Image (cartoon, rainbow, N blue to C red; front, side):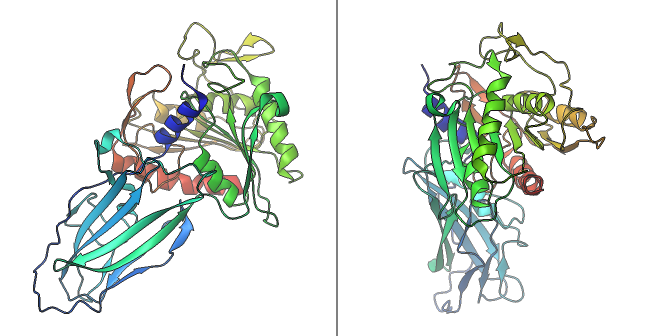
Amino acid sequence: MTTGRTRTAAATAVGLALLLAVGCSSGGDRNSDRDNSDVQLKVDKREALADEPVRIQVTGLDAGQKVEVTSQATDFDGMRWTGRAEFAADKKGTVDLNRARPSSGTYEKADGMGLFWSMEPAKGKPDDSFFAPRWPVGQSSYEVHLAVETDGEQVASERLIRTWLNEGVTHRTLTAAKDGVVGTLYLPAAGTERRPPVLNLGGSEGGVSDPYSAALWASRGHPVLALCYFGCAERPENLGRIELDYFASAARLLHREAGAPGQRPTVVGTSRGSEAAQLLGQYHPDLVHHVVLFAPSENTNPGFPIGRDPAWTKDGKAIEHTGIPLDRVRGTVLAVGGGKDGLWPAKDSAKRIAEQRGASGQQHRALTYDDAGHSFGMPPYRPTGLRFKHPVHGAAIDMGGTRVANEHARSDSWAQVLQVLRS
């Protein structure tokens, strides 16, 4: 039997990862007489939240001088991941990673955060590998080491801190016996301006939903409940006959604990969790404001992995919809889908969801990315593979897309989702 912890770790892997490139080549002319003492590696933020971009520049070079910039980080299992890019300095002797295109490396186009998401593992194929630091409740941040090499020697380096959980953010494990629901409750630091709360629902991997996203949202002032609705202690083993009132109870608990009167939660659902999120917004509009959907389905689908059971029930009766209605949702439904999703047609579902209107008459929204796959619902700038072994039934799953397209979709949609959460 797969444990909730195992499924959560797998979900985290599916929603989180880093890719490494082994081997270094300095490039450039190795003129031993060249003075590299003026070379500097400049980073605008040495410490930042893990989903915040940083600006990286190499200065003090000769025009046209070749350099190699590398990144390194270590995952929860102690394995090293590495990114690499070679550049030629511009006329001012500068390499600005926001604008400079690598001549070779682990990514191809100008990208200020390319060295982060393109890291590759020391063992295994990048497309089959997922970078996961230690969980935020055990380690609030992780390190990325940057280095610059030119003329065969390292001339500059920096250590960056990528933070999941800001100081003062608290977390508490919820149990069915004590709290009525299972999950982890994150509360912002005392004295922090309380932003609207977030109820986070994972997908078919089961277990407690993504702790990395929850930690980042809480660090920005959002009380967050990362919920388990199956695949953990005190909950069903499989996704089948999950009562809608369970999600309603979670929303009520979050509202009580959030300490933000008048602010109804935004419910965020990924993959199979997108169905539950839509149903909660439709059938309990008094409990939920906005609804955010990553890699969604517009329909309810059978139970998983046992398809003869309905996935969702209300008052003991199966909930089945071809096209989940969203006309009672009081806020906005934002659906994010990729055109190369390997699991189901998420892009088409997102577009049809956006054709509906909510209780206010306002049309819902969609963000679609033609070349992206299924790996949404996780923060950007961490390497994420394309294939994994599903923790429930053990089959190999290809989520679709490419690492480049998926990263673009994640970084673009993540920023827009943060705006929805704040509103």
